[in-house]
Length: 348
Image 1: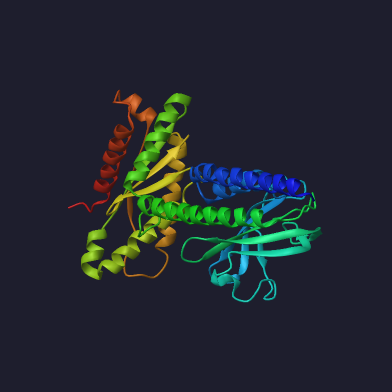
Image 2: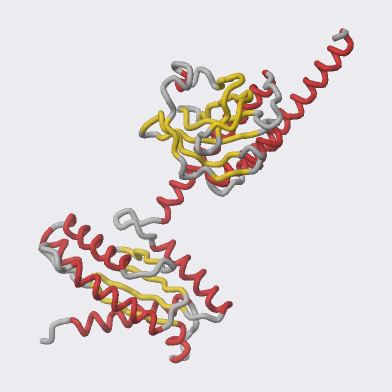
């Protein structure tokens, strides 16, 4: 190739690389707004394919319990379409990567021409391929696989450098999204029972209540109080009291529909939100709770579980000409719960 053509070719390649480097910055911003890890990986495959220029991209995560096992997220098929690889697990042979590759010293492995696989690891054909590590700054969390199965193009050094940088972005953001999800989980879940906490169940109720008013369907709540919890704590200790709470909560969960939500208001009080549920449906669920409590008490333990309950619907509020609000619904269910608790007390 003449010198002037070589120079033009070099400058064109350098300019193309510079444009792709600039595009990585824009990609990192777009990836950062992903809702969760799944959304991040879906976006990373779609955008990475366009910007990096590889025919196919797939993102796999390392199983923390067994680094030889990878589990899928998203990738592209032999036609360039995004495919869902979640739920797929793959065990890599010990000879598949260079020794010490997972130490993080080598961020990329250019494998040259070799077999390219589908999501089930069946061979589709041969092409140049490479693998870059997802790294969160402390450890390897996964891999990005790329190949040029469709076009059979070669992979140059500039493309590999872009892939390393892209893998760093995806690795850091995937770890960040996981941490954010864990913090959200901790902030919305009651640690002892695993059901949502007071703040979250009240938010759920408010949303469902407003939706019911707009759509014109019914909604019910059941206010629950665990009878005699203080006596169990005083007589048998707080470990027994915690066990009481968990058994009672399991009875509530076993009685509900998939659309229902139970939350711990605090101490011995729980609130159940029943969307699209009238008095008849609420009474059926209340009956299931009674049966579940009876089943729980069939076991041998030093205490008996008892749950006082009060149910209320929007129809009840309207019949009483009461304020139509989510708080009024809770207050009515709370009063009815106390009526049940009063009726259960031994008569003098």
